[in-house]
Length: 106
Image (cartoon, rainbow, N blue to C red):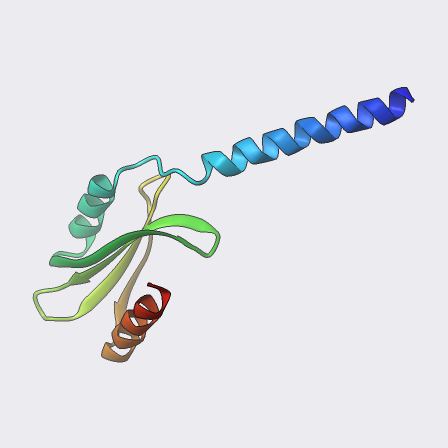
């Protein structure tokens, strides 16, 4: 009987701690403005779009920045650390597909 109660209590503690951990992971530690400044420092230009999203299991700020040459650079900033995770040049085709995907989701 004691073993069953101990196991139940341990299970409850683990479940509560897992929920607490998951809840903590859903809120960014840095602001959108701070992330934007980091992205613009790395890739100069004008921000075309900005969003907070989950990518590859991480909460990231994603910025599409149009450079002075007219290309779109996508910059991912870790929403917890402010670290730059990815900088990628989007082709016109990728940009169109992303816009279509966003349209379908909304």
